[in-house]
Amino acid sequence: MDALQLPFAFRISELLPIARLLRASYQRDRADFVDLLPEDYKPKFLADYDAAVGAVEQATRSSVAVARRQTITARIDALLEALPQLLNRLEARVRRAEGLTVSAKKFGIEAARRDRNNDEHEGLADSLNTLLQNIETDKTALLAKGQTQAEIDQLQELYDDLVADSTAQGSSLSDQRLLTADNVQLFRALYAPMKQLLDDGKSLYKTADKTKLKDYTLRNVRQQVRKEQGGGAGPDAQPG
Image 1: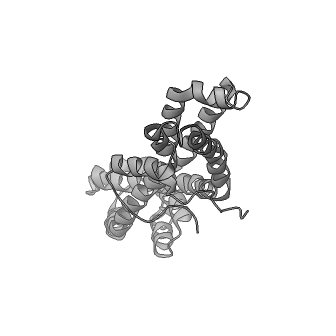
Image 2 (image 1 turned 45 degrees about the horizontal axis):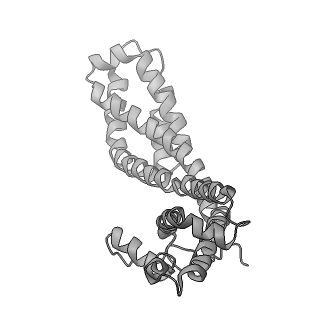
């Protein structure tokens, strides 16, 4: 089987809701399953099932980290747009301020401008760090020439977001790997006992109880999940 091939045809977002519905049905009908296959439905079955559900829950939470990074990136784009004017205004004040401990040439403005223009986010974080340190050292002289705390805060916010984005990017790359080959292994591990319940539920209730049979018919369970999720019929989230 291909590393990215899933054993089911429904959306990945439906896997956990379907698993939970099957679990509830199994809990209700456990005595029937134990009577049918006592070795297969010992208490360990449910413990293993819950562990598989927990592993998938933990893995799919990674999408939250991706969304958080998108928010950080949007803020960075807005701050980068404003950066040239912030640097120009700071440059004028550095040029006229008296008693600076760092020369205008070494203040860090040109390095920040260069890194911003070259789209070097990691380098820009370093240059902004230097720039902010110099601003803090000579803050009194700069404030006297019109530099505002709001402008300093904007530079600080950009630096903080660039650092956060760098950290989130590293973790999101791991998340992407998890959401491919590694995650598919977790999906398979959960779907195996789900398929077992579906198959054995049919064996139990196909002729004995048509109502309970619906609870172990994938099409019916999936329809219930989609109804609870708002009836959306968007594209499947599975690879391929």
